[in-house]
Length: 502
Ligand code: NDP
Ligand code: HEM
Image 1: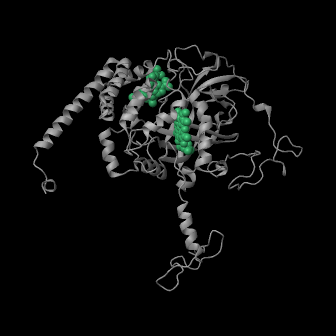
Image 2 (image 1 turned 30 degrees about the horizontal axis):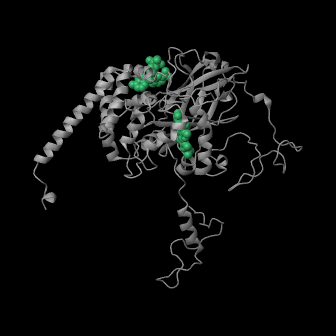
Image 3 (image 1 turned 30 degrees about the vertical axis):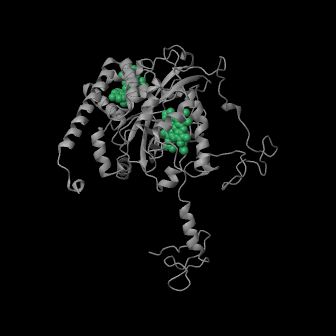
């Protein structure tokens, strides 16, 4: 087999890629060895900033196939019309860990999908949980600072986490999910995905519906206990990558049933819960899930860095027939992601192959670093609009119906009159005795070492959700205290080891 000739990045053939150019066999080196310098310089630029959150991730390509004709009543989005099959990229992730974090950690899993639709990319950047820790984006940087490393110890800080959570009772629903069995899945084939926010659908008659997206795993749910996960991390830090990559390589393609909950526009405001509050679900009894179709993952990326690390998912990316909602968290996310992408990847990140839409693109953004895509205005030399040269122009067929908004501009206290206990209670009541005991233990382990005042504040919240909840965590903490005390006593009684004796 003939090999291609190695070249410089400028295309010139390279005669020797083993020995640097030196003055005599023992050196020193000559500055003229530009290929050595190029190799070192490129190596220095191999890293881009990791994602500020969701840094550790696993990705694969696949398709969404829509099977239910009923969905067309609610949306005109081509990607959701019956019979449509759309290519997609799905990136799963953990939230808090850095790029090299172990996979088998208790954390929310990201579930970010980029649908390459004929009307542009639709990104649904969700999680494996239907709700979130906070409901006002003003608190997002504060919340994330509690999940990341302590400025002095450079370690994760349970005190910071529980201090913030115990002062933010809207987190109770998500905390109950995170410390339940589903908070530590064995891998990402065995998790559900949720769009989490309320979005909108617009149909052919220009009617608006509120919508929530669900992806139910068809592999079933699987999780590890903390102890099992610790053993897994001791064996491999890449358990999720191995599981997903190997399943796809051997043709065992994971699948999810896509479902939506649909709320008529005028229903918003009729319930005890705000349908745009990200700490709440819409109970299935109010809005039963409707099947849409099946999402399948069936192809591994060829180059992890180019196709997964450089992938840019942004809630701003919607397509005709799918819109936003007043959810404050969603509103902030519409801004935040593209801003992160310009910083993390570069100005023209949307033209990289993994991010580029698979449909014609016309815009008037001009120049900028690494502009490699030439003229996309549709008009020769016109980088302005309107123009007289047949450049791309707006099309009012894609206008959404107006959304009625009213009220005073103010900073409204989002906790006023908001019931943060009822839905966590519904979740707690779904758990059987074994699930409850594991929840108590997981929480006690996570709260261990946190100042008592913070623990008491948090136990007060659990008790308001359900008396058994507060009592269960308290009892697990007391058992841990006794066990740790007896361990310490045992250690003190034991003879000193050889090293200690010396
Ligand atoms: P339902 O009984 O109709 O639905 C229960 C939902 O909870 C199902 O989606 C189910 O997902 C999920 N679920 C079941 N067991 C667990 C578990 N151990 N851990 C996490 N989720 C679980 O009740 P409601 O719709 O009234 O919701 C009750 C509570 O269920 C909510 O307060 C919320 O905490 C939780 N939930 C609700 C969802 C919703 O969209 N309504 C979505 C997910 C959770 P699955 O079918 O995959 O087992
Ligand atoms: C990643 C911001 C809430 C899911 C990110 C990133 C930022 C961010 C800046 C990194 C993006 C990148 O560098 O590519 C925010 C802000 C939030 C918020 C400001 C709230 C105001 C949420 C919520 C969800 C979510 C509620 C899920 C429902 C994700 C996922 C990723 C991510 C899945 C990883 C995407 C990927 O795989 O590339 N977020 N986030 N985030 N976020 Fe959020």
